Amino acid sequence: MHLFDDVRPREKDMARGEGQSRGNNDNNSGVFFLATLLLWFVSVAFEIAFNARTELLSIVAGCCFYQMVNWVVRYFVTKDPLFVNTAVSLVHSSIASFSVFFILVNQWNMTSLEQMFEHSQLFSGTWSGAYQALCFSCGYFAYDQLDMLLYQLYSGYIPAILVHHLILLVCFTLALYRNVTINYLVLTLICEFHSIFLHVRKVRRMVGVRDPKSKIVCAEWTLSWIFFLTARLGSHILITIKLIKDANKFGRGVELPLALFGMVGMNLLNVFLGRDLFIAYKREIHQHNRQD
Image (tube, rainbow, N blue to C red; front, side, top):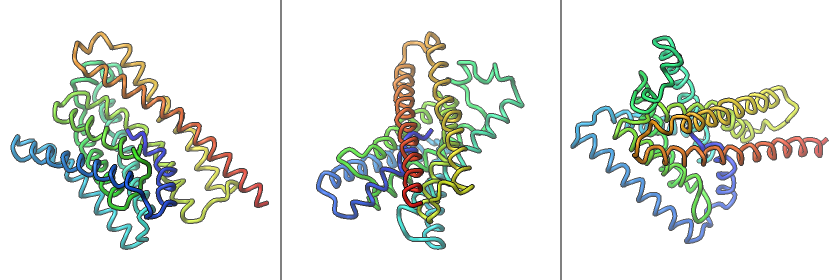
């Protein structure tokens, strides 16, 4: 699921506006996150090479695929780092969204909805294609973290977007190592349907399509609000309710506290995102009216 993908356009604009004149604090945070990313790469390589976890090669495939998309956009469209990064993020949101859609439809065809969402299925089961989809998205987060570090597409002493990616990499990778909560994590990726429209908005503004009364912009805002309320806000609330309902089935491990903590954070971020979307929508309308 991608939580800070939603606020990424605003943060990256801030980072880009600051140019290359960053202080020591930003450089120090960059070094820290680069070090953690290298440790993550070493961990994955160790699992693949020494523990024969060949199924984790899908993580490597994800990294390589999105880097290739980066090169294609950079060569054929523009070398602007912000545009390239946003375009690749749009590709990931699209692939992740439709992967989750086909996983759920395929599982629904093989079983019932009631069986799909049983605790045993969500916690210890793995739907067909779910493991690979999670690995591929994990590869994207690693690629994106490195790309933002290389081109300094972040700002602040503790950049929220880098913290978000680090947390996702840790959580996703631990789940993949232990092969638990895979289906739960796949369900959180439903929010990528909404992320598509966040990235579309960023791209169309960068190419100069800003008239809020145009049919394209109106359609984009309408779909963005629909998917925000359903694919993001609604799905995360339902996942949280499911966790609370099945709390007594988790046992005494750390999985339930971590899951609840994560979902509370996601829901809070969704509230802040909704506020930011409303402010952005009002700003676009105001700017258009002022130009008239």
